[in-house]
Image 1: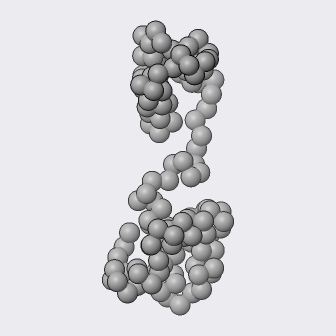
Image 2: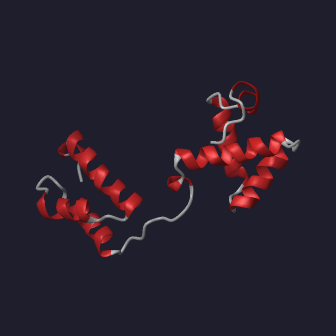
Image 3: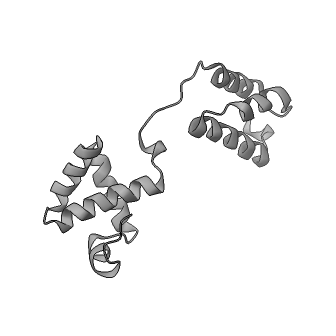
Length: 132
């Protein structure tokens, strides 16, 4: 499949169809592309057909399925534990254990939030301890 023959519009349409399959399990957009998209290269057509037939399985769990709301709830849990007097690390470990998550992934989430300005101090002092 040569990228020279693929338009940006085609890539957006294909990406949306794949996203719909990944997030919702809806294969109708892929089916439409396989049957009606003349610009779809044969290699892509074969891959999409495999997705439709179920030869390729959708991933379950992991970061790809975490919504912003879900991540804010995790962050809120960590902040509430810190507010109860636990250390940052103990809070991260406890929340990871409660939610069945990897401690490093929760720590990474907290670190990314901190870089964006979502800090424990702001949550506690400026924001009035909102529930995310």
